[in-house]
Image (tube, rainbow, N blue to C red):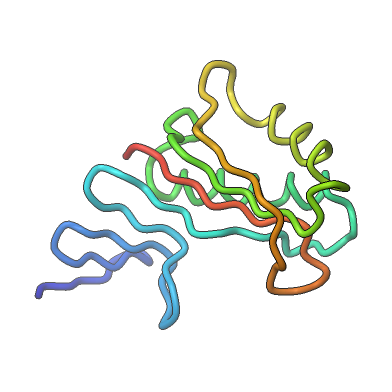
Length: 128
């Protein structure tokens, strides 16, 4: 198995891993797809709109590192700590972020997130 590292990318044959550590890669490019692992907000202000905006900014940055943008999204998974309270606010920010005509397939569920201060986590898949 051949691997190389350059500019923060680890390449293994036809798989490119971006922002990789021992546990995970933030982004993986393989088989014509770009996978962005679940992202959360570093700003733990208890405001779903603010946290959602921060998560989507991170996703924009990771898509850019992969050489694409959000018009290439094909799937998204959204986890909310309290779906009854936060679904509307998250959707308001999401709807403003997704380009017209480019909405991916999406699932949204309630889940216990890694920290009680986290309100939202989002993972996406896009075409490379």
